[in-house]
Image 1 (cartoon, rainbow, N blue to C red):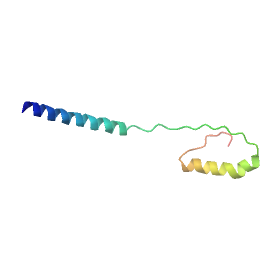
Image 2 (image 1 turned 45 degrees about the vertical axis):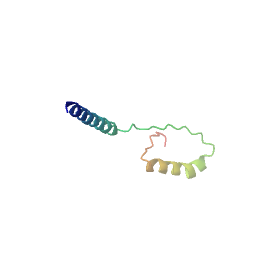
Image 3 (image 1 turned 90 degrees about the vertical axis):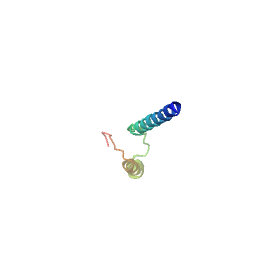
Image 4 (image 1 turned 180 degrees about the vertical axis):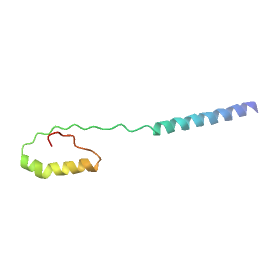
Length: 71
C-alpha cells in the first residue's frame, strides 16, 4: 500500500511540475521582429505613385511603423 501511495504522489507531483513548466513557456513574450530594407529606385514617379502607398499600407496593417528619416 505504501508503494502505491508513493507512486501516486510522484505522478501527481510530476503532472503539477509539467503543467507549471508549460504555463511558464506559454507566458513568455514574443520577441519583436525587425525588417531592414534597402531599395534602389530606377523609376521615381512609379515608385512614389504605385509602390510606396501599397507597401506602407501593408506595413501599417501588419502593425509596423516607418522609421525612415527621409520619408
